[in-house]
Image 1: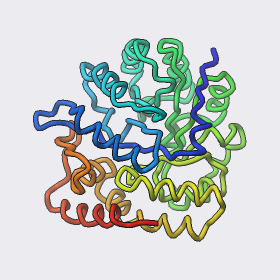
Image 2: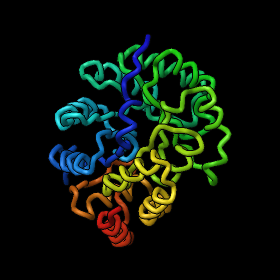
Image 3: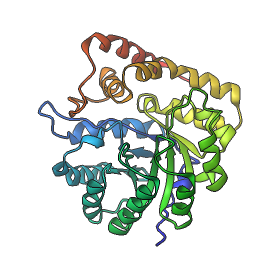
Length: 304
């Protein structure tokens, strides 16, 4: 069963923005505000959007999944590709798969489940999800023990993966034996760096990864695109200069919460009203809102 999509070809032209999911004051998904976020990102030149962790899909009620996919289908525009997520538990994957058959998304990211998994079990779950949904998978790796490199290679050889989002945090991203094993077994043009701008240069230069995902790029899409192109041109001084512009807001995300800070940041600069976060998360504490707003305004105001 071969279902590989054309996603790698788009990675030459666009980073993958990972936006928050806006909700209204009552907690319902707000299509108008989410469309504002998408249009803002598109205006900055990004044509790939991924709804995953920053959108808090982990805690999405089952009753909201089909309406979410319907909304994403409606707000997808022209050449922009929107990638939804499924899971993370096996039960949710199977339930989500039956709903996905009603839509035409060419690929879906499988959210990682940790703590009660084995590598062989994860590989089997992904195979069953693909069989049920008839959609190829973006594999999301956040920990070394989630799936063995050999199992990643088998899924790739069988044509079940459109891409791999690699997001395991290292103190030194250049020293990463797990990622080295993966790129030795899998074409790195299928792998994207999944931790924003911070390790993007090293991941692309030293490991040959195809691109990177961005949260902060939802506020500064042109800067994220400029970083991608500087890396592709091997303009390392320029790339590092652009990368540093993202660091103040990224530092707050590292310290406080990547999801919660981005949710607040998008709202603080007036891109859209993001509203309340679903439990088991909560909105950022008021004592942090001004420093987030200041870093966000500075990022939005910067140019290459």
